[in-house]
Image 1 (cartoon, rainbow, N blue to C red):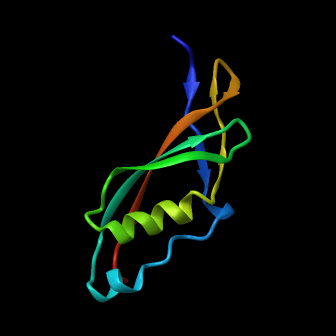
Image 2: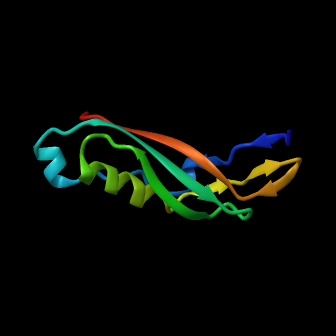
Length: 94
């Protein structure tokens, strides 16, 4: 079995998602789980919502913002490889 390390998000490389106005007015909260396919140079190649927060607008805002982040690429057998990263984002009202 190949030794594999998952890609890691560099949260300083991108802006955090902004609360959509309608979701804020409706006091929507929740956790969205997303999958990002990360290339060997740390860029997002593909993204998808794996588990919805229960709000389409929150899911879309999180996916759009976090797709802009850079990642430390994952490795397989010590070499950078294109792998999926799972990221949770929690929407909560301050």
